[in-house]
Length: 187
Image (cartoon, rainbow, N blue to C red; front, side):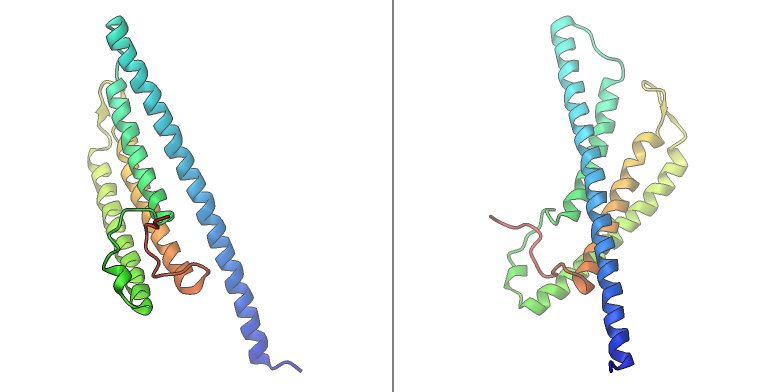
């Protein structure tokens, strides 16, 4: 006969594994969505700039608002790209000191680093929401769209980055990912 405590332990483990799988699936889906948005913005920005250059130098014409739109697209590609890099642990890092720490200390430093990075992103997220609330109703004159349409890239990117840090920390502590691994892997 199975002891009740053992039954609860097995049940808790299976629930934990199920939660980990859902978190991992959510993370992968969010990475795909953000990477897709990043890619679309980058492709559209490239086409816009090439077309603008061809028109300007070939026909001495230009597209009204193209420079402003390219700037907005650049903001989105930057914000989304940084979030995806954090999620894939490909963000730039200097790991020379980190690699010289013992394994246990590396795991602690990595966990604290994820918490601090999430905190910084949450602070930027909060300040950017206040900033949008103050200035977002104004119009981008050439494009005739509200400023918030470009400014919202910042809270999207920082919110996603903070969320990915929390996911990485959770999976590192209770899941199937390992803390203490350098962010940039050399092949």
